[in-house]
Amino acid sequence: MKRLHLALLVIVLMTTGLVMTGYKATVLGFPLLPAQTVDNWIVEARVAFEPTGGPVTARLVLPDDPPGFAILDENFISRGYGLTTSQQGENREAHWTTRYPSGRQVLYYRATVYLHNRTNGEDEAYPGPVSVPEYGEPYHSAAMALLESVRERSADISSFATVLVSDLNAPNPGENATLFVDPNDTDADRVRTLIQLLAGARIPARMSHGITLTDWAREAQPMAWLEVHNTREWVPIHPRNGSTGYPANLLVWWHGDIEPLQVERARNRELSFSVTRNIHDAIDVAEQRAQLMDSRFVDFSLFGLPVQTQNMYRVLLMVPLGALIIVLLRNVVGIRTFGTFMPVLIALSFRETQLLGGIILFTLIVSLGLAIRFYLDHLKLLLVPRLAAVVIVVIMLMAVISILSHNLGIEQGLSLALFPIVILAMTIERMSLVWEEHSPQEAIRQGLGSLAVAVVGYLFMVNRHLEHLIFVFPELLLVVLAITLLLGRYTGYRLTELLRFRALGQ
Image (cartoon, rainbow, N blue to C red; front, side, top):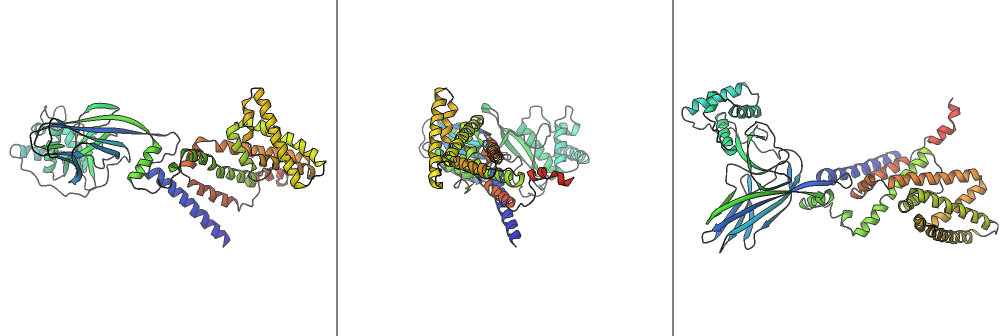
């Protein structure tokens, strides 16, 4: 029963930690690597017009859940105007209103977008077959012949549309396709023609318009695309080359063959788009995304703490990882150390003193302290006074070493004060007892083992990737706890014991 209880506890801890980490990484977008950045673009729509008298209403279509992108932030710059947004069919619109405008008016809509989930968005319900339009002759005969030819060379709705696009854009289109091709056609004109022809095959199709996101563009022109519904989803198709799928840098702004800007009681209407690319810290973007999603994870995140407190926890959160390393090295490998957490605290000190300097200072102070401890042993002191004397001597030795190193220009000696004094005193006391009760070799062996474990713990605790993961995803400590609990039941041979008794296996 106890084994089952531990197994269930470990499963719950691991599942909870991994699920929370996966949610924050995949849904909220918290980065798994340090110093990771996210590309985002600021897309601005500029609306300008001259009122002709009376109240003015301006309507501008807005991007709404564009495929492959997510809107991180959006702003409306329209001083003196009332503003509302509403859903109009398959598009979202902004409505600016004012009663007494005068002079040329300029309004702005600005959105910050980033790449997110390279899919074509949520599947929409199949609208059903469309009605066949009245083409009139000779267009009706040509359209039916062209569609029949395309049907023979296609396998499904998507391939039907791509073959039709290829036929209309061929260098030498056939006589049937020629009736529907005009060399002066714009992309929007070509999409309208394709929609009409696809309606002859009862295939639902629509026009979409997108902005190409570049590093910088002062006058970005919307591009018309064709979308056909294959009974499951809308499939985008390039109206010139027939390629399927939107490019990775195309932001779909609106759907339908409509004007993106409508202004009542105004003249000289102008709509222009501009694009600029930015690079933001991935953590900042993930926090803003979580706020937009109204996720409670941000409210309980370490990033909400003061910076000074955050820096403290960047160090403290690595202690459990160091403790796990000690458990592995002691219980599985079999390295002997003085105490359980002394190597972790020494490893924390190495973060400030640097590894080589810390090893030298630690060895020096323990060696000198051990010599003083042997001298105090001749005085026949009681335990508590003896420990107090060792602490006093350790502090005096640390001060002397710091002064000497400073005079010699060795700045690493100044960081000696960062060593935990009580741990050093207890290490000296434990080492002296092992020296007397067992042997000098055993004392030196355990001392070197403690130092080796501290070095291994230091190498893990200063790893930037691990520090980033533990700080950004502190729920991973549940996984560390689960592994520690599992190792707490380990009763097998240690690696050092296998080496020690290898002769028995021969």
